[in-house]
Length: 178
Image 1 (cartoon, rainbow, N blue to C red):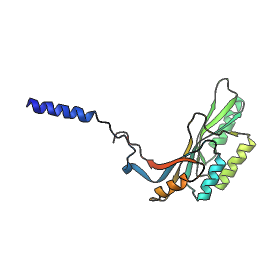
Image 2: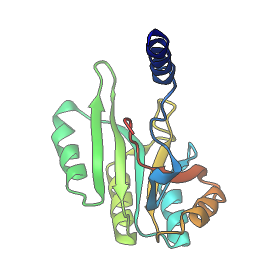
Image 3: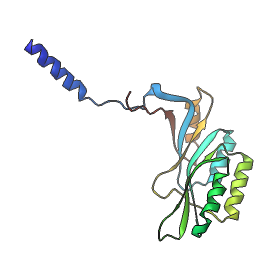
Image 4: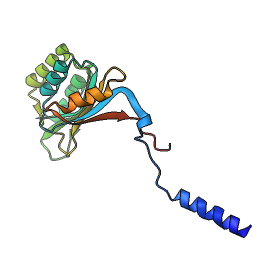
């Protein structure tokens, strides 16, 4: 009985010390979506033209970054400009103490149409916003495209052939306790 108990305890200790897979398994792929990272210094216009040329209409582009020198009392004006754009789903306005620049970062564009892009481009020009070449902290701009289910592998290959794309891969469900 003691040998059996010792065997049971050592087996439990052995298996509890094994590393656990915390997601990213092939059975956890989100069908109909592909994720990608964009090369630094690629502009929103280059992204828009590339996806339009590919015929992609449902996509998110994230982590675009603009800056401008504005007085503190103008923050609400710029907040409202960004908030009232249906094609911008996330944004952050940041002004650090002692810094003359206001940063408009983490901007997420959703399903840009030709009209939306023209509107945003005219706002950028009118307000003299400076599109920054990358998001400033080493991270890349990225996105997700929605495609027909079963076409993920083909779209990953198509995206990887674009000069604006740094990487492309399947979209995985993150499940930390599976």
